[in-house]
Image (cartoon, rainbow, N blue to C red; front, side, top):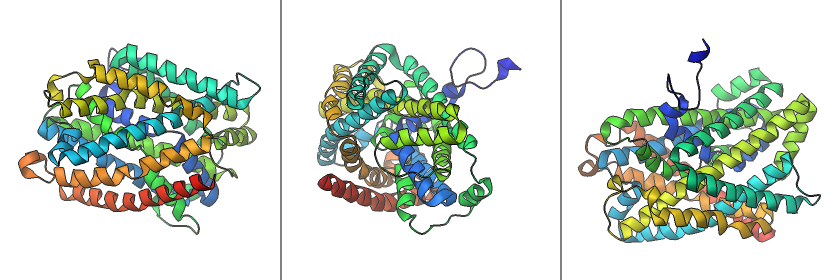
Length: 425
């Protein structure tokens, strides 16, 4: 019986989750980070489990967006960046400027989050800020070495380990926190908008599952050798698994938050969560949650360090009118390697920026990406002369329109709120 146990790892015998559904799990795990964890837990604390449904809906919508990325690439043999190039050089150049800014602020936020997670587990100094900065630098450099020298297979194994820690810890603490399961069931199957809950619903809908990192999915499925329309089913299957895990993570954090009284902002909430869980569950709850929190933020850092350099390398290839990515291993290019090094080093000064400001800057640059992606996928994937038989179905179009409208509202709301807080701090 032991030999048939399911495994995240790839190995001999029956293939594990990562072998069958790897790219979908990778992109979903990369998109689940400190921000999602804190938003979901604070929302659960503020309005309870009545908003559980929002975590599910948010995951489903992000799944449709990622499916659109796969649909385009499998139908045309080109990446979404190449699809944007068909819409004019202006969009492509604007995205490059956006990517550079997003990389700096996101890299800084991830390094700060990893620093905070490391300090919570093992303080290196009596001064918390010094400990956070040292841990942040160490995480960034270790991520650089692991991704740069380890190759894609090692990356998959590292992500599998982090995902196991993250989901195991969060589910353990959700069950151990002793929630009202009857209320949780109602919050899942009977969508409601509680008084004062709209901001938390919007946060869950918009925050679950990543932003620019979703574009990495196209390069990761190429690493797995998926090409042509026949691979669409495999992509749909692994995205379903990946975003099911994402929704489960979001729901678990809402459940945990619903059992605690939480106040505050920034990554200090994670430490407060661990302390409160220690009071409710015992020392095991405290440490298990901190380990899971570390797994969430470090997997996000690894995913960004591995996936985002593809975008820069692909942009340069398109700009230079070089041959298609189908015949080029972008991971071996100088552009990919240089951007990886830049991601790990250039944002390090953000460690000297207050944590809240780093997180807010990240929210501003990431908030409005989803409407752009949804709108362009609606255009690209409905051109029969471009995508042929993989043209969007009515269901996919309906989901993308809903996503576009939702994320226009969410993105504008998040950007304005973050700008207001940045101005006030």
